[in-house]
Image 1 (cartoon, rainbow, N blue to C red):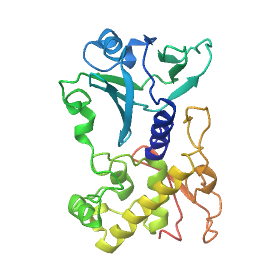
Image 2: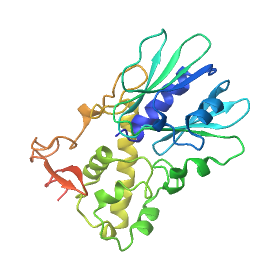
Image 3: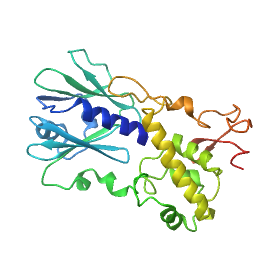
Image 4: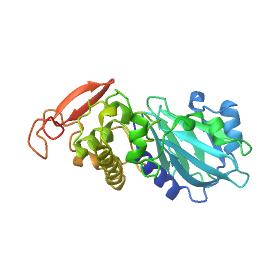
Length: 278
């Protein structure tokens, strides 16, 4: 599943590509892709004739303002959703879910192999959170001042959940996922099975800084090579070659040479160095 760096890469690509993109036509190829009230009919009616404005990201959600009459277009890529830009008319693949054209017949296409991706149209007279209800359950952004060691200490107090499991909880921190949880735990020297309520403030400070640093590096690399993620041009990211532990089970640790361990934790593959994170 795309995590924060991949979603941020998509946001930047959409913001660059869709400058003054006025939606002339919308086709919903799979009705289930539309999650907002009114279904595909209301979605098409709400977007047609609107010009796409600023794009924002909240956790793994993307939201674009619609001008001039207001409203918001929301997107969640889920596991395999991706946008494609087509300058010239081309036949859609079987996994095409939503298609949008401007008057010049340029097309923005949403393709989703697993069909879990969702889109919303939020009318101008409604709060975004009332329609995209998942936004209300998100914790702070990793780059925000609210995401601090003191915040983590308070939220994790008395918790027996493994810290890796806690980091995957979007209510604790928005946008982190399996890849970057493994990477930041390695960078901070914390074993993934450590009960989160046992971590001291200085450990949580290292963890917070490590997560911010890992995410920053991955955003600069355009996301990861480890998933089905592609940007608008069909390119995946370059972070995979820089990974310290993720998907490196059995390989020598880049720091100490100890073989990287891999085990299931809360249903997710978890990678760590027994020596560096002992």
